[in-house]
Length: 111
Length: 116
Image (cartoon, rainbow over all chains, first blue to last red; front, side, top):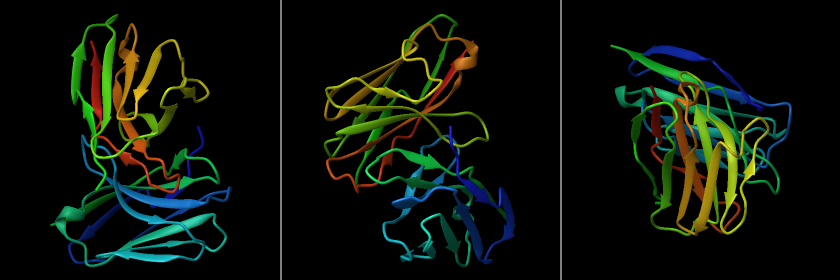
């Protein structure tokens, strides 16, 4: 099935650093979503974006819906140990509830 | 917030066994439920979309006779892996969304299926 291009694939950072990851697609989407998944668990919704150009924050997380509807980024400021996990973007089409997931970004925090 | 419960969390069984996984929406009516499969170090891949009271829609390459989906109520969908084999071992995750099509999907905690 189709997957979105997500980068970077993995990140190794020190606590306190800022993090940035992004997703791009050849198709336009109606909605962009960002999820976090920890080992052995299902994805947990972090931020949902519904309008092109929209910039939304959730605590230390900020995400934007690209103006072309083909991309989105997620920033995490001042990372902390509990930020460790795999972050997935997901796009949802127009009039279609199906989600297309990105390939994921694995975030590791170096002590 | 919306809560989706999945059961069991882990199953280990012999090859040839059929395994049933339940997905429940605990605090909202889930008109649509989705079933995903995730192999190690990979992303989630949609298997099928299930609407309450109707037949599931399967993604290309997913065998509908092997992965039986039932969505008989607005709070419960089941996935049955029939005659499971080692290659069916994976992490199966369900998600659900309500009557509002703009409502984000909320995911269960997944079921780790291991076929010996």
